[in-house]
Length: 284
Image (cartoon, rainbow, N blue to C red):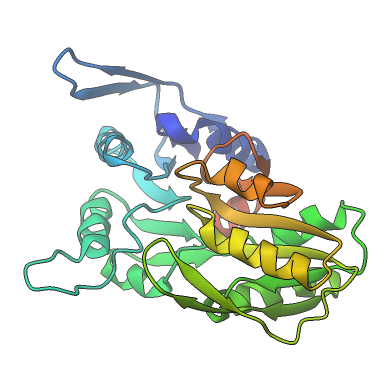
């Protein structure tokens, strides 16, 4: 077995290969004068683990090209971050179900798919091959154990993320709760206070994705009003669009942390161990 990756997932792929004690394949990436993408791989193996996050159209096309280049191998596809996964509903006539379209396209040429904290596991049914999802809640918990936290409260920003928050809290035996959120528009949310015991505590807000950071910044203001000592924000996928990182820091959050599913300067923990564990399970 060898590991291979798209250009945007090189660091995670290297960590997976190191954890799995296998070789990583060299890939050369370039672009034609007309803007079309090109790649060429090194020597492949009979079994390949293909790793590539989808964050824009180029990363999607590059992943499709890489799968095709590995067409003579048995391929396990790892999607650390699956762009378009949140477009899983049709609200108006004529709209595509984008998550389904992407899943169908990526099913060709692979024997199985693994996602990491996909926003809705219902998307997995759109793949034409067996698809599983893994969670990094335990990895977040291990990261937090290395912090000097005072009576920590693990807080999910809404009820939808409450289960994930509880999973993180269970790793350290910490308290867990969630806020009530009402979305007013695409940019504005209202946070309704709950009976949170945040006074003089370190609060860790956890979620699967941090995109614009608006929800978490609003939550931070609310928690400081309730007497929180320090606030941290930790997610799996650090999309961090529109100046989200600095927006969160300016709201008083001490540290913003994400994994390496999307490789960012604030990627402080890795998905590699969980990915390799699941790959190992598939081969036993």
